[in-house]
Amino acid sequence: MRRRMLIAMALILVLGLAALISLRHYSLELVNAVVANAVVQKAPEGYSAQRIQEAFAARLRQARESGTKDRYLAQLERISQRLEKIQLLEADEVDQLLDGLKR
Image 1 (cartoon, one colour):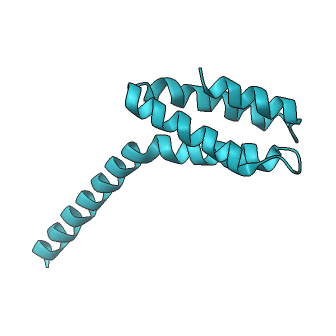
Image 2: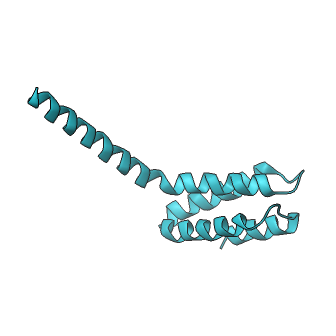
């Protein structure tokens, strides 16, 4: 009985560690997707959701290739904080936000 308990605890520990490693590995992708979706939702009607998604995907690729993941994560955090305070974005605000991703 005690041996089974130790095996179960070890298995839970291994699964927990695997989950933490996975989350750490995919955290930038998750935050990127959440922020991109928030921009799509707050964009004015008729604004191209595809354009928004493509801009965020391009910036994510750039961050991976150039090794600036932490910097991009901080940029996403700033965008997210800004979006919390805004109900809807104007088209020019979305354009500015997407232009800011390129930097």
